[in-house]
Length: 446
Image (cartoon, rainbow, N blue to C red; front, side, top):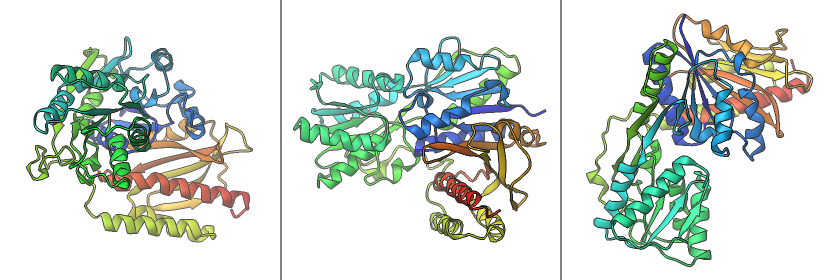
């Protein structure tokens, strides 16, 4: 029987998230194992929709997996170490691998941020003669955030740079934190740095967007560097100088380790994977002399126009269709054009948080919409039959949130086309379809 590996991640909310999911799915396929990706929100999140989605992590022994990979840095964004450790302990009946955050007695794969980040910060000091720094950090309680801040401080000290320690803004690793940081530096502190160093690419891009609004030229007036090398970093304007996290290598190693642990083999408890700097234009260099390879697995741009047209068509057909019979005919066409291979949308019955009933089943290029008689205690009971496939299968699962309430779940499988844009839009398409069906249900249209 093919082993099933679970992967817990908060959500598909950035290019970094999507690249991680795509890379892990590709690695699972190569290794011949099933992968069940559960997007249940960050633990203890202040965002209502995320906190409600945490329900997907409940009842660990019901989840049909033989081993578990957890993106602890993202899942534990609002957790302290002890809270994250307690959460992982709920899964002590199966092997567990933690990504990006070291947890005692748990096999962990982390990146060594020091080499790449040190090289990039030293680069703007030595080549571009930068002296006046501002720093956009991640959350104070986040391990990755603290490690990157330590590398930043030690690199300045190593290069005998005196830094105004007020020139730091603690963000949340999201795009808007970059905008907020610029407002803090320029409006509250009234400083004009030579260079802004961001602890991730999302915040760097947010900062660039805010600087553009202020008519400040990048990199002529202010240089900006990031960390992550998200898929869209090279296509940004200006292309972002950053530190590359070797996502493919991390994911391949994670699948290898968890598979060996399932088989009872011993593995090193801590594996560190080095980073490297990527030079583009935002630091002031000529982007034509980049040091990166053109062999990326995931390309943002191919067939971009066709993909956008397909998704716009899908939204239009789903959003305005009031005839369920017609929707059954439309969905196979839409899903085929957006590379969705399988989809089951289920709602909780009678306003409860139990007893799921499927309302849409899309399999083998055929869609069925109805009030199915089947009742499942939770989505994992529904999943078990899917994971008995003769061939390795990748399945994704997330909650449907409507008016701050969990109304059901979506299970789906996609063709591994490696497309960033398509992956980002599919979840929105499916969420939109689910809410359309939910409204139909209350109107008794089926």
